[in-house]
Image 1: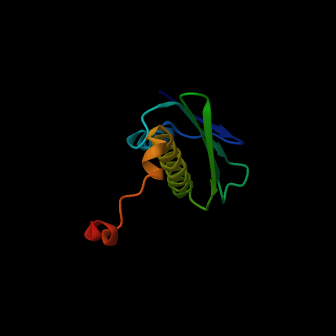
Image 2 (image 1 turned 120 degrees about the horizontal axis):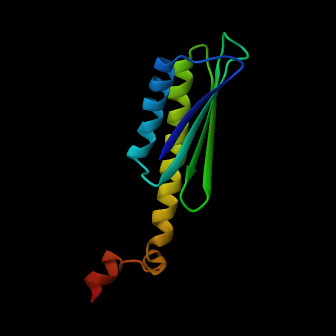
Length: 117
């Protein structure tokens, strides 16, 4: 998996880029089929840096999360949290689609009916 950190309208130190990469790597805990993660930091407004998180997963699914707060690391944490929510929801949807659809339709017999027999 590739993690790429880029900056618009400014420059990020190597130390900051490493911190952002470490936070982005946390996304693989819940969903291991990620192919690439791109972190774009927009420093046009220095007082409120904007973080865009672009994640590509297998089978051509792309996810995005944006966050803008006064602190760069807080923005990154919030964007990672949003992305984590998206990936969990997507993973649950995949699991639901692979389960037996007939299992949802059949209901267990009611307790009253079982007592009468």
